[in-house]
Image (cartoon, rainbow over all chains, first blue to last red; front, side, top):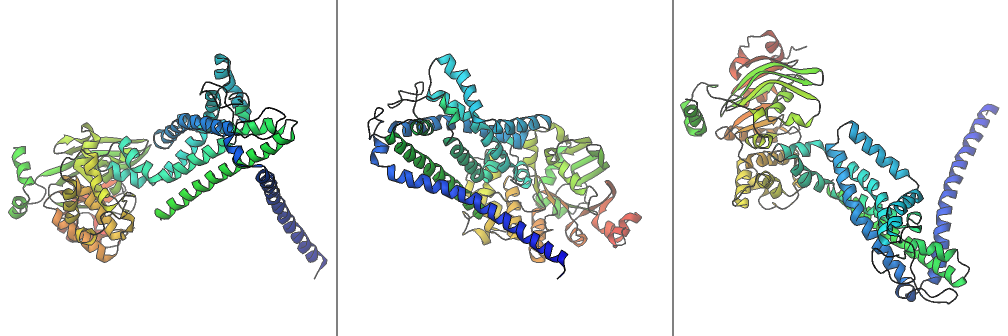
Length: 282
Length: 270
C-alpha cells in the first residue's frame, strides 16, 4: 500500500469516527439531562405535590396544585384563541391564497415562528398587562396564543396541501361549492395530520416560560379567574429553582419532571395519531 | 321547436329506437373556443356539436388539448389560475358561463383519469353528490340505484360501509362513475377513464357506457383508438390544440378526409 493510499484511509477513518463521537455527544447530553431530571424529580415528587398549595418561604412540604391548574387554564386559553385562528389561516394559505398575499402571510408566519419568545412576552405585557394594571392568565394565554397561531397555520397548510388535487376536483365536479369541498373532503382527508400539528403546537407552547414571566405572573393560591395573576408550572420552576431554600429546589425538580412527562406524553400521543392515519390512508 | 326536439331526446327508447341520424339534437356545443394557459394557447377555435344520448369520443396524441377541452365543458378548468377562455360553450343552447357553476356541474358530471374516491365509505362516496345538492328522499335507495347503474352493486352490497380504498382499481373507477351518476347528470364527461385499468375492467366500463347512453349524453377522452372505435357514435380527432376532423366514428376510422387523421389512425403519426 502506498503512503498516499494509507493517508487517505486514515483520514477517512478519523473523520468517520469524529462524526460518530459527535452524534454520541448530542444524544448523551439529552439523556444525561433527562436522566438527571427524572432522578431528582422522582425523589421529590409526592402526592402532596399535586394536591397541596405552596407553603410560605422557609417552610417545608406543600405542593403546586395551583400551578398545575393555572398551567391548564393558560394553555386552554391559548388553545381556544390560537388554534381556530391558526387553523383558518392555514386553510386560507392552502386553498385560497393568491400569489403575493399568501407569500407575505407565509413569510410573516415563519418570521413570527422565529421571534424570541421573550419578545412575545413583552408584547403581551404591553397590550394587556399595562392597560389592565395586573398580571393575568388572560395575558399569559394571549402570549402563548400568539406563538401558537403561526405554528398551527403552517402545519395545517402543509397537511391540507398534501391532499391530492384530484380529490378536490372530484368534489367540485359533483357540484360542491369550494367551501363545501374544503369542509367535507379536504379537511376530513387531512384531519389526522392537522390534529397532530395542533397537538404538537400545544405541547410546544406548554413548556414556554419566557412569555409567561411577566404576563401571567405568579400566585400563591388558586387563581381567582382569568383576569387575576395565575401560577404556572414553568414560572414556578423558575422561581423555585432560583430561591435559596433547599425544599423549594426539590419542588422545582418535581415540577420540571411533571412538565417534561406531560409534554412527552402529548408528543407521543400526537405521533401515534399521525402514524395510524397514514396506515389507514395507505 | 327546440322544446319538441329536446323532449324527444329525453325519451331514451324513442330516440334510440327511431335510429335518427346522430348529431341531430345538439346537447352541448362549443363555438369557436380558444383556451389559454397564461400566454400559451392550448385550444384554437374549437367548434364541435355533441349530440344528445350519444357517445362522443375525443382522440389525439398527448398534449393535443382533448383533456383541456373536456375540462372546459364543466368549467372544472377554472381550478387552475391564470386561464382564459374565449368563445362559447352552450348546454341546451345556454352559455355555460352564465350558469351557476355548481348547478352546471350537477348537470354535467365528470369521471377522471385516475379514480379519485373520497377517503370515506363506499356508501358515503355515492351519497356525497346527493348530500351537497340538498337531496331530500331516501338516500339508501338512491345510492343502491346508482351503484346498480354503474354495475357495481353486486360486488359491494355487503360492504357499503367499508372504505372505498378497499376496492380494486376497476371497482374504484366504477364507484366514481356511480358517484357521478347519483346526481343524475344530463351529460357525463369521462377523461381517459380506463387508462389505468386492465382489459376486463375496461370491458366492464365500456359495457356500462352503452347502457348509460339512453339516459345521458357521454363525452369520452381516450388514448385507446380501439376503444373509441368500439364505443363511440362520433369521434373527434385533436392535434396541437385544433380539432382536425369530427364525424361519425365509422367515417373517422374508415374513410377520414384529412391526411393527419389517417396518419394517426393507422399509426403512421409523427
